[in-house]
Image (cartoon, rainbow, N blue to C red; front, side):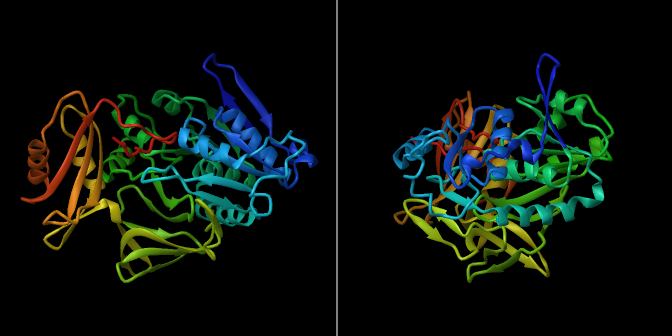
Length: 405
């Protein structure tokens, strides 16, 4: 297989991914880091680390809080001859991935080769019928989604990888051919829906993750390009959990994933993909299962995802998803992005407050936003904290991040 990097000047950098060419025995069992320099460099370093049986910590070096955390942990480079002092040395893992920190401080998830390879086996089984010939990757590799689907899936299936540091929607459309798997995010799906150009992509597959994809956007894309969109639901800690296609409502658990619910109907996940060790302020043993804060409704072997506990507004016995509220607001004129959370206020009569941040040049009032939501949902009465800002920050995969003001 080959890794091909398309450059803006139309040149292509090509690398043969041969395990024997990447092994460096001096790296074996050493702990070091791989920061977010470029997709090309990250891909090569990740393969080198994996084949050399090293232990690498992957992170976004634009995240200042995370950089400071790693500085305090004193993580050395591979070339450091004193590479034995980190607290991670005695732990069994191949890579450490950090959560986005979209709802708080980042958590480190330690992934073993067994975690990675068992999930690749499940993905390979799921994607086999598409006869994939090449994988086109728009996402960074420092997150588990990019590494698994964009590097290890093609490697273990002997499929070429196509990269470009920054894909524009038209670039992506031009390069996508029959039997391509495009590893991407909802942002690219939405962007491709907006361009006038079209193309028959019926023999290809788009894979979307990192954030919810609006069912209307998924359906529009499927109809416009005759191309299925497979959505993956999971997290850094759990790995992949389930999948669905286009605007389907129900999620199907991945092979070897066992789902349960607690008394609050919150999802509990047990699978070989789950990190057995997490790190926050100290190491946490998960025993291979994680209780999430995602509300679900089970329907036989499948489930409907309602939302996270911080993303569910409960009024008069009904539950409303903040993702649904964000989609409604982003359809309004003058609102570019919306970020909505639910926070608890014990002093409030209703107990919950809708925390709304808008990326907009217009100064909206809470009364206006309430009226928009009441027109689209129902005549709800709820408390709201509203802020209007110039820019809602996003992670390297386009996930909207909470604003602390």
